[in-house]
Length: 469
Ligand SMILES: Cc1ncc(COP(=O)(O)O)c(C=O)c1O
Image (cartoon, rainbow, N blue to C red; front, side):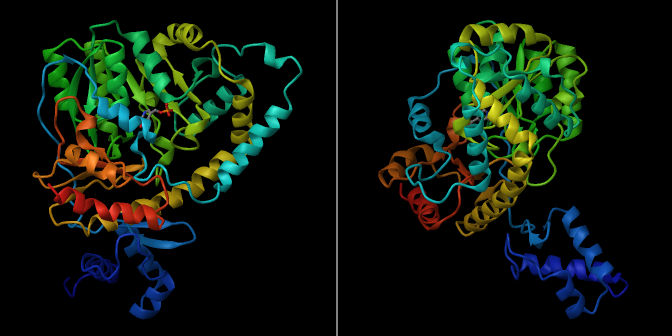
């Protein structure tokens, strides 16, 4: 800092230094604007300017009506490294361990047997809306199936929801499904034949690997950054070397580390799709868990009818609803047919209830409240992880429900899985997010649940487990 700095720059440097020296820890509130004005003898505009500059750098986060909070400890949160290996397409064989983990609540909780706490208000309101819808059923409704596309009222609400994210959809371009996993299944069935090659993120969502195995599709893993998603140069190389039929991406907060794909990468992807005649399957399930602005979907940029949008309420509202949707671009008619053949129809009263929940603003209220909670849970998790070891690298996602942790090379998270289980703790080892045996020293940890005492204790037991070889 020099004497010629403006006063807002002096304050900015002072706050930054305080954060680096851990005077304020990750997730902690900075002194209020009023306190800073008084203590530093500065005007409100100067203080606000300094804080806004720190916010733009991602160092602090503004929370409405609560103040400014430390978002990152600059230079101390080390991002996990991307892997660079590109291997030839191969058939998929998913391990039994994955099935074991899936049966344990998909390892989205370190302690899946711990059921504590009251229902959040957003879920109370949802249950009421569904209850009202059930009570309004007409006498003979139970005798009929819904149309395959699903309830119009829900599809209309979804079009309004996407319009806020810059995507114009008509209700007839949407089909309701029993979740996003099923939407991905329909998408793959519609655009691929057995033996075709599908490009996926690596590390990426293990549910996709299971689908590829079932559909006898081959996988080619594309190196993926934990910050910015699938590496488009690597995808380009893959597309030049092999004939690839489809590519599955999660531009908004990809599993496992919450990567957010920049707009330029999305444009690059669509240009490649056009050049190589590729179907692009967009898994948008985490978009509504955004801690800040909700990014526009990839599909909003799609002028070639190539992006099949898949999503559900599982991450934003309830996994138990089993309600998702798909917008199938040029494959949409085939997808409607496949839905009819594989599922017949979705439950009408459930869809009507959720449509009303969205229409009366309850869903938006729930998302706003949840955003606040998720940010706190993420910050508590990262703050706790930073006490583990200096060699640890961790993603700092701005959405999604998990962080990706890279431990020292010597750690084998897969070998630690049974040991953790003996202590009642379910971990999600890194190798599950790939079929090529990478990521042995990595692990996904979820912040979907509150960090109450028992869960925090389970988290704090992990370093010991990984050390014990
Ligand atoms: C990235 C991703 N896509 C899809 C799904 C499946 O979601 P659903 O519960 O809607 O079937 C999950 C569930 O964990 C997921 O993480």
